[in-house]
Structure formats: structure tokens, C-alpha cells
Length: 185
Ligand SMILES: CC(C)(COP(=O)(O)OP(=O)(O)OC[C@H]1O[C@@H](n2cnc3c(N)ncnc32)[C@H](O)[C@@H]1OP(=O)(O)O)[C@@H](O)C(=O)NCCC(=O)NCCS
Image (cartoon, rainbow, N blue to C red):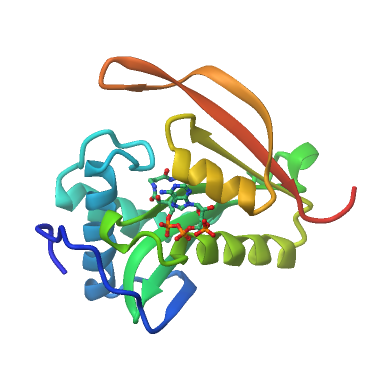
């Protein structure tokens, strides 16, 4: 797949999600293609415009080395089309050691609608439970309606809205904050 990909992909034979701590050149390329397309489409984990490819590659290469972060990639028929991160609190934060955060979830626009994000969220939730976390937090721009439906369908509860959450093309955008209890308190 390349940057000119505009056609929606046909339904895949297989959907898989795995945690990666090392990325092959092919995987890095696919991940950057998907991220680039998601950013161009307006949902790019903080980026408003796609950075240079070298910057994006550096970002993902560095990300897999960060101890508090785990990168999960979503594949359709073996090729990466989406990702998200499970972020643990810093070690000194004993008071919030029971909470993890799901961040930077995206699927390339041409790979959407096949259940990949739902599986990514489920795998991250499963991993957070396995690590013993009791709460999974996340936040999302109020304009990301697909993501909001995804998280609400997955059982996340909105607990607040920040009116000045992000600045996109000169406009201030609100953001919603969600949590899910993974284990009873
Ligand atoms: C949100 C996003 C990750 C969904 O990816 P996806 O792989 O297409 O989602 P799925 O196919 O797994 O859909 C799962 C559920 O999400 C919701 N959903 C997905 N696309 C939707 C849409 N266009 N409109 C409304 N709900 C939608 C639905 O609840 C859907 O379940 P259903 O198919 O049973 O109705 C994708 O649209 C995206 O990358 N958006 C931009 C980035 C973003 O907003 N990320 C969240 C930041 S925290």
C-alpha cells in the first residue's frame, strides 16, 4: 500500500492485533502509511498535519523503547493498518499506579469499518487487566464521533468534557474524558 491509497480495502480474511517491541522495515513503512493517512484525514494522535516521513519513523522507533508505553498494531490479512498505545503511569506516581491510559488509537481511513479498532481496544483492555490495572482512561476530541461511539460501545463512561482540549486549524476544540473500571474497586 502507498500514500496514494484512496480506495477502501475489501473485507479482510483475518484481523489480528499484537504488541510490538521491534518493528521491521516493512512494518514501520506500513505503520507510517496508516498514520500518515489518518493524520491527513483529521485524526492523527496530536499531529494536525503529517510530519516528514523521517520524523514519523523516528517517532515510532523511539516509542517502542519507552518503558511506560506499549505499542499495539492492528493488522488486516497480516498488514498493519492501525495502532494504539497502552500507557502506564510513571513509577513515582504511586497514587495512580492502578490506572493505565489508552492513547493514540487510529485506523487508516481506507481500512475502517472492519472491526480493527474494536479489536485493538479489546486487546489493550485485556493487556491492562493482565498487568493488574483497575482503571483504563482515555480522552478524545469531541469532534471524533466514530471514536466516541467505539468507546461508548466498549463500555467506557464519559466523566467530563474539557472545553479547550485542542487547537485545530486555529479553532479551539472540546475533548471528552472517559474511564472504564477493569476490576471492582
Ligand atoms: C475511531 C476509529 C479508530 C475507528 O476505527 P474502525 O476500525 O473503523 O472501527 P471499527 O470498525 O472497529 O468499529 C467499531 C465500532 O466503532 C464505532 N464506529 C466506527 N466507525 C464509526 C462511524 N463512522 N460512525 C459511528 N460509529 C463508528 C461503532 O460503534 C463500531 O461498532 P459497529 O460496527 O458495531 O457499529 C477510526 O475511525 C479512526 O482512526 N478515527 C480517527 C482517529 C480517532 O478519532 N482516534 C481516537 C483518538 S482517542
